[in-house]
Length: 564
Image (cartoon, rainbow, N blue to C red; front, side, top):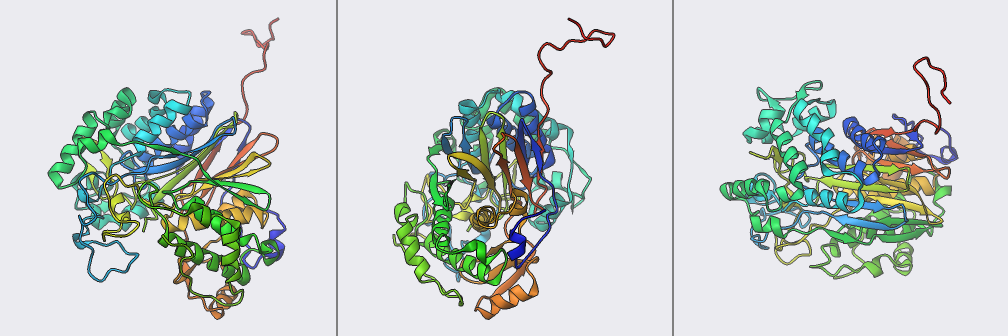
């Protein structure tokens, strides 16, 4: 790999994966079988939306700890006509839940949402009204070209036939095995004789395959008002959960316009509230625009210090003014203005770390998944989906074979706050399916899992691409940093001298094996070819499509000779 950024870098690095390029589209997800499912749709003549939905359904099978039909997410779609929309399929608070439904654990810090008995974390009481399935089916119907039955076939196949567990899946199961063991349906699949599945073990989900077959036949109505919804509601009632049939039948997705930022001649488009990402990526880029970031160099103490201060500013503002716009007044115009960025920039000390408070008035999980796809027609989808924690609420609903989310853990259990519980409320999220355009043409689309580390990591990738001149593969794999105002997390690739310099500037530096999850993205080139890249932090795999159909008029006989 080459690039001028290396000449100025305080932290050079080498990529561990290779991109994939093609002329007919590319699919990138955090599992090879899911990427292959999307590529199969492209090969069959489908578009990026067809490929995205096939990939997502397959991810519910092969990455079950991260994503499921009883989950939520955000999809950023750019159609071939150049229009953008963000499909909000986030989970919502059930109608019977009130601001004081849970009891906050005594002594919890303001940003910690722990409750007595972990009721908002584990079990049926933690499950919010799911939005994923409805959003996926509606998106396919509105913008895809293939039938739901067709795009579901790879997922059904892998659920029924099984697939081989990866080392990554084994590690994820091991992390939460003790909690998973409390739920018999869940442990029956992922804990054999009480032990986590090993890499190479076959994972079969026969009951879930039947659920997917019913969805292929009846669509989202099977869950939002049909027999699958009855199973879910009955389970919730029996287990003390909150979701009712009325919650399911009344659930609605929301289509929103993206937040748009201008940065050094580029246009950046990202999700609007209730996502915090688009607003605060814009805020941070606006602040950074006043500095010669290229001259600072990637991974130097000066550059990391600046990133840390900008991140602390963004998180101070996020804590004060983020939420569901139907419930909270989010000052989007103020936070995304160049004038506001100038005010915040002027207060930054280039040599010393400092604490920041919000400049405006008025917890989420790292276990998410992201996928990106581009077709040959000009359609691009970047979408982030989750069931929140690893294996969500650690319960598998009998009769569905699907894992319940624990989205209710993302709400403040204390009344009177921006993120407090309220019936129908959508959770604030850091999901960042972002796109970067130059001269009106889309160049990059990317995203990643990682909870509150998502939008800071996506922001750093954009800076890597625009300011440091990295390739997409380099940008997604580059070492990252993160802070929300306390310790400064830095990945292991940053050398001792850089960490020492940051410490001398007043930062409390903590080494971390990873900051955020497996980022992936696509690069659309001027010649129309596309490439996909995925980083080393997950099982990310790009699958690209090239070649094509035979040239018109070419026919051969059984003897191999051309026919007239």
